[in-house]
Length: 408
Image (tube, rainbow, N blue to C red):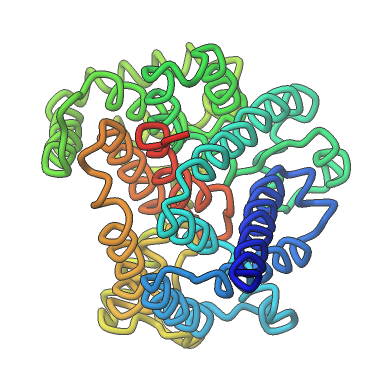
């Protein structure tokens, strides 16, 4: 009996340690916390979580998805090995591993049916997102364009310490709250979140002046608020219909974009982006940042078409090199169908093991919109270096189901 009690006490202590470490990891997604503690502290916490959860009996499904993650990281490192990675190889591997780590949180707590932990950790993630939205909104008033600087790091306009002291979220954070918008709307309808709190993420998205984030936000709010019954086929029809309307009602669309240019005139970056798109639709040629992006996308597409099976496969002498500005196109261009399939297997396994089991719940239709937003984002932007995006996609999207299933 004493032995059984000792084992139970030991198991309880490990459970508490795992929960505390998980909470610490989530708090490290706050920009200022991550900046001052450093990525290797976060990595140490992640390794500790995996070690303790393995001792405590990790769900068997994690083995398969771990193999898929390992294969993708190896392929991506081989085919995208930059000069930075060559000098600091651990940095490159670490960033890729950290992107997929939220899956380990999801598999462990869902596998153990820890609905109370999932619910509390979901609340913590929401707290991180809302808090950082608020501080980013304030910080961008003091340091205009700071989110873009954090995304590219090519300006000496601001000191990193100044930006981090105001807890300003960068590109990855802005798009993480875009993907989380359907989940916020779900919680508001469930009376689990005050509707005023969604104003902070929306204000942050507007203040960051990412045009595509603004467009995706409109899709998120309209789609998750008004489409009660929807599946992926309906979503595809919705998107295709929008594209067809854009072609058939081209003049109306151009007038609308010019109107938006005037409406957002106080936001210089948004005004410029709308002008570039309107000019492209009206005169048939791109300019400025829009032109540069089209070139980058074309490079990745051509790299894929040159060798659809393996892409450039790290060949720096290949005729076409990847553009580096669209995750899906870049994976196809750098590693072809092999690399894309490796990533697809991770998403498919996540769906089969976790999401499909939750499709009877009300929240599932909101999850569909979040996943759609992720793929729309990854089609024309990079995602692999953003931990906040993966925290929402791989953890919050499924963990939020605990608000319906919890028994506390």
